[in-house]
Amino acid sequence: MKERVYFVDFVRSYAIFLALFDHSLNDFNIWANYSFEQYAVVKLFTTSATPTFLFLFGMMLELVYLKRLRKVGLPSIKPKLYKRSFQCYLGFILTSLAGLIGGYLTIKGAIGTTFFAVNNHYGNILKIYCVMILLAIPLLLLRNKYGIWFIVVLCCSYWLTYPFTSQMEIQHGNIAIFMSSIFGIGGSGGPSVFHSLSIVSIGMLSASFIDFEHKWKFQRINFYLLLILLSLIAVVIYTTPWDELLNNYFTNTYRNNNHPIYYLVALSLAVIHVLFFSSVIPLGIKLKPWTRYLMVFGRNSLSAFTIGNIILNLIFKRIEDYSFNLFAPLLFIFFVYIILFFYEKFESRKELKTGAYNT
Image 1 (tube, rainbow, N blue to C red):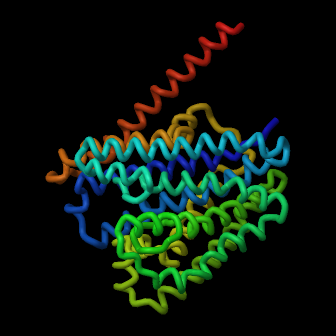
Image 2 (cartoon, rainbow, N blue to C red):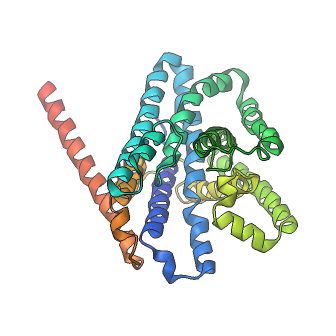
Image 3 (cartoon, rainbow, N blue to C red):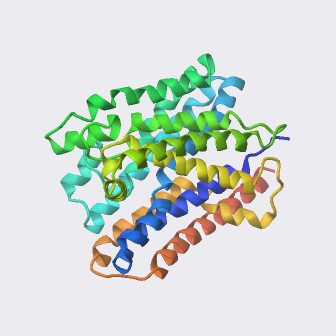
């Protein structure tokens, strides 16, 4: 019987919740009711969604695609990766279209998003995924041939360019957005594709320690990884003025400039999430049937993320002048959940009918 790593589904569901919660908190103007300190505490959790997605992507490359590559060969995984990349691109474009309809983007801006030369409202991680999934093909081939540590060193070595790329300035805004999204040059948005590969590679490394015979090996080694990351963060805190650190992190300055501090904190938060859920839902556990309802977002992560952001883009202009309470974003997330819940019901019934017909 095939062993399933259930905690990954739970982490993915949680990350989707965090992403939608963060986006809706912004658009429903919730922060008008809270101090900066309260804002920072909540933001520390909600903004961990993106790095957690990247970390989980690396884990899935190791757990699913690498095994399939070794078992069946490259032709078995390329179509799936191409399809997923296209789905991410489609989700990005649909989010841009919703932004155009909702008044966030102009026609020119919406067209610019198709070339990754303009950012849209909340869907930008999808363009990163679109490119990164294609890069996963050579990444998996290299992983299979040279091993996991080669991949970690290769992906993290891009940071050697940071002293040079961080000094580069691009005057043209659209070019800066494109270069920042792909290469982390230009200070117009992050995380970039090539910087994010470091998080992906650590996710692959983390997943390589999953062992159903030694069920707590994964947690133990990831705990050591977390200690290393926290030690580096302690050095950052010691050497960086506290106000500067808080301001640059929570205003997304570090993120937009693809600063190492953003990735260091982001990776630490991703490891914390994975450690927590892997401890609560350890390897080999048998889940109760009702737990499947907790993983609706995880099973439909791309759909949940895209649908939620499309809705926010469509209502952007209608709600920007109002300030809501915390009930509004929670109701919004529940609405997205209901859509996906009934979508799954519809799909399962369709499969049953198709199976009965074929029989």
